[in-house]
Amino acid sequence: MGRRDFVRTGMTAGTVASVQRLTGTTSTLGYAPPKLGSSAILDAGLIEQQELMAVGKLTSHSLTSQYLARIKTIDKCGPRLNIIIDINPSALKIALEMDRERALKRVRGPLHGIPVLIRDTVSTADRMNTAAGGPAQALAGVRAVHDAHVVALLRDAGAVIIGKINLNEWASPRPGASVSGWSGQGGLHSGERAGGAGAAIAAGLATLALDTGCAGAMAQMAALSGVVGIAASAGLLNCGGIFPAEQDEAAVQTMAMPLARKVTDAALMLAALMRGASHDGASAGTSAGVSLHQLPERRALADVRIGVPRHHLPAIPDDGAAGDASARSAFDAALQVLRARGALLVELDEEPNAQVLMELQLAALALPTGADLPAALAGYPRICMPAGRAKGQGAGLSFIGPLFGEAAIIGLARAFEQAR
Image (cartoon, rainbow, N blue to C red):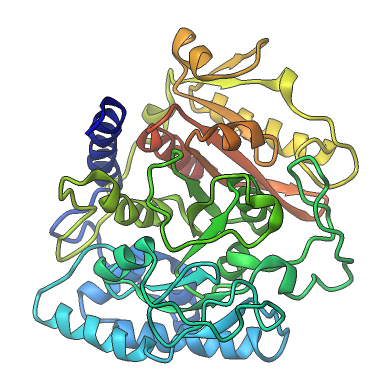
């Protein structure tokens, strides 16, 4: 093992342990399970669903059935979102197996029995196709021989993979919107299609989703959809079995990004995927129940130094991207929340990089999602999350940390989420 690999292995092992502590996986329930209607259960999130399953008020089979019914109702019929390209015919059978294991007190972790959707660029060795975009693609009807590494990890964690997500270019446009595609500067035009993993989570078609591709594109789609996405440090996750779908991604490292409605849910999914990166057997949680250790909001952000490279934000007027005035307004409002909770915002006059983070003792950088493309290309970890609305679309806030600093930015994101 080379020095670089040794350092990376040690740091990722520490990150897995930090994420586990941060998300607070324990062997007992931390609070009474919520009383939710069937529709609310689908939108509640991983923690609430696990609490209900832990006390026998919800099963994976029931949860999976309800998500499949919602997909049929609003994706294939009704609004016809065209987000889901393929359904796993074994989903309910897998869910029953997860329920059987739970009954035997063999719970694999926080993802046990949780329905997950994955992008159609991820190989699965089952009866689902891996067509990389749908019937118009040359690979239509092709089935993989082996699971992608991330799929194997999700299965091992007990997740129920219920289907494949269409690529953005094959999804249905928003009502009344023209399909205009890329702005050419890392952002999306306001007419971009409402497809992809972000739209799947926003529509409540599964608890979690796995997106793949260029980190910049994934984050922007997550921001437009109003969901949380985490892009790990470059090279941290094993992306074997995933291939880029867009031509312009060929020169950029393909990445995998967990998506969820809440920071903790996305973090728990990332922790499961990081098990394959640590090589030390570290677990993201193997307890019989999942509870959330509440971090005090003010103490989590108090005196934390966060860099704001305001002078380096792109100026892209009137296209709905990060430089738009309304998006900047949403960003300024997010900074006010951080400042009100005691964070020390440091305005940066120089180009932000790893050296600047160290010299100024910054825990992270804060940027509007879409303006953080250089950080994405450089391979720094980042988490993007909802920060308001801009021109009728979601506006996102991204925290960027140093290499293998996933746990730190997840903590900041959780505190910001709670504060909002």
